[in-house]
Amino acid sequence: MPRGIKYISTTVLHPGSTLAEKLEELELSPQDFAKQINFEEEIILEIVEEKDMGVVTPDLAEAFEKKLKIPAEFWLRKQKRYSEFIAKQKPHQGVVYNPTKVIHPGARLAEELQGRGLFPKDFAEQIGVDLGVIINLVMESQEESITPELAEIFGKALDIPAQYWLNRQKNYDEALARQQAIQTT
Image (cartoon, rainbow, N blue to C red; front, side, top):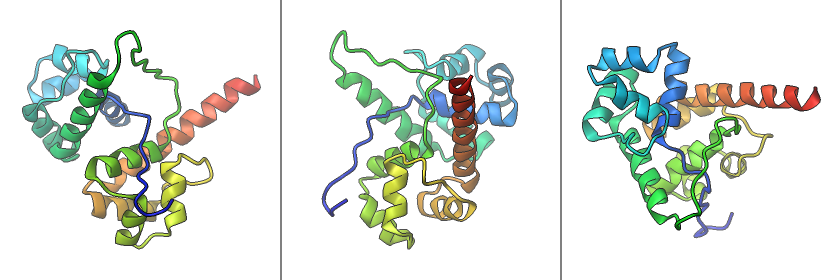
């Protein structure tokens, strides 16, 4: 990808999708999580279920950071990008969220780079990783995976824990395997 050409992800995810994945990983129900962070269950359920009223506010982002160890800024950026995306949708066009869709971890990386105004080439140079790897990830190639080494590098460069990236890859691999199993039956 030539310098100056920015990859624009067409996948804009509600922060509730990330929260739902994290809660599933921790084996926590939204109700239990709400109790642990001292917020109303309905608020957390609306976010996890990606309802229009499910908005991550600064105080929620801070509570998420304390409990989940994922920076508040991450949650607020996701909410801002999602809200901007929804606001730009034309009437009747709608946004359909398909929870069975397999989301490549590269979509998360692309979203993060886009939100920070980083080009894949600049990011690759900054972290000392082959540009082809970064491009394959943001282009959601099944040939490229987030390894533990890459997760550590991303964790340091983006201030998003390595475990987050590893979990995204694990969730993707499992969902892809389920999808492929369904297609072969």
